[in-house]
Length: 308
Ligand code: PYC
Image (cartoon, rainbow, N blue to C red; front, top):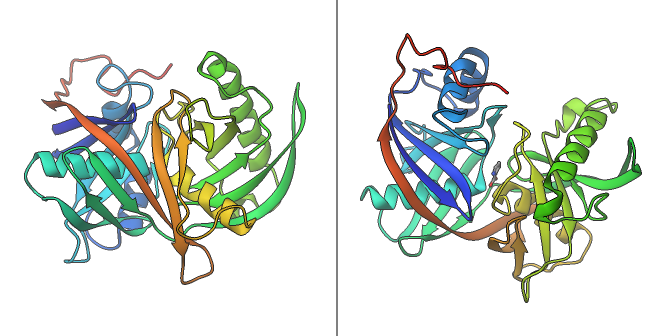
C-alpha cells in the first residue's frame, strides 16, 4: 500500500494512494458508510501503532463522482470514518502538489460531506473553502462529573462538534490528560441526550485564551478515536465560525487566527452560505514527512494495529 505522510500544524495525514479496499461506486457518503461497516480492521491497521501513531488521520483516495474534482477522498481515524477533515485536506493538497498532480491555484475535491475547494498557494500553504457549516443548538448544558454543569454549543462543520467556551480545565498542553478525560465524559453525556442522533457529536472542543500575539483563542479538540488534534482542526474551526457568526461576534469576511493546543495556527474567515449557515475559509500549512509502502505480513501478530 503506497502512502505519503504529511503533517498540518503538527497533525498527521496519511494519504493512501493505492492498495485500499474496493468500495465500489456511487456517492462518497455511501462509499464512506461501506468503509465504516465492512473495513474497520483495514482502518485500524493503517492508522494505529505500529504503522500509524495516536493522532493519525488517513485520507483514502477514491475516484470522484464529479468529473470536475481532482480527487475523491474519504478520511478516517482509528475510531471513525469522518465526513470531512480540514487539516487532512490541507495535507492532501500539499501531497497532490508534491506529486505534481495539481499546481498552484484552485481545485475541487469531493468528500463524503460534499465538494470542498482548495487553493494551493505555494508548496505548503493551502486555503480550504469548506462545506456550509451551521450552529444547531446554543446553550446546551450537560453535567460533567467532578466539575459540575458545562455549557456549550452544538455545531456542524463537516463533522459534529460540542464547543465549550468556558473550559472546565485550563487549555494548555500540560493539561492534555485532564482535557481528554473531561472531553470524553462530555461526549458520553451528550450521546445520552434526547435527539442526539440528529447531531451525533463525536468531537469536543474547549477554548481558552490565546498565547500568541493577535490570536483569537487557543483550543483543545478531542477526536473520535480519543486522540487530540495537534492542529486547530479545520472542521472544528468551521463549526466555530458558524457559532461566532450566529452570535454576531464575527462578521462576514473578518479574519481571526485560531491556535491549537500546541500553538500551531489557522487563519479563519467566513462568507454567508445558501442555507443560512456559513461557508468557512481555513488557511494553514502542511509539510511532507515520508513516502512509504506499507506491508501486511499474515504472520505479523500486530498486523491489524495495537488497540491499547
Ligand atoms: O482538521 O477537520 C480537521 C480534523 C478532524 C479530525 C482531526 N482533524
